[in-house]
Length: 79
Image (cartoon, rainbow, N blue to C red; front, side, top):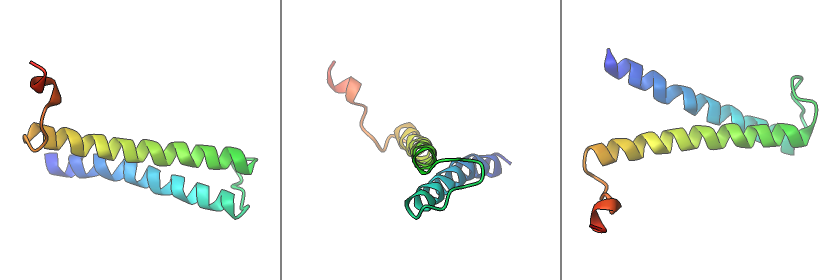
C-alpha cells in the first residue's frame, strides 16, 4: 500500500511539470489558454509549474539517495 501512495506522490508533480511544459509551448506558438489571458503570463505560470514539478522530483530522489547513503553528507566533512 505504501508503494502505491509513493507512486501517486511522484506521479502528481510529474503531471504538473508536463502541463507546465505544455503551457510554455502553447505560449511560444501564441495559443492562449482560455483561463489565461496573455502569452507572457501563460509562459511564466508554465515555467513555475515546470520548475516546481522538477524541484519536487529532484528533491525526492536526492532525499532517497541520502537516506540510502548513496550521497555523501557534506556537513560531516567540515567536522
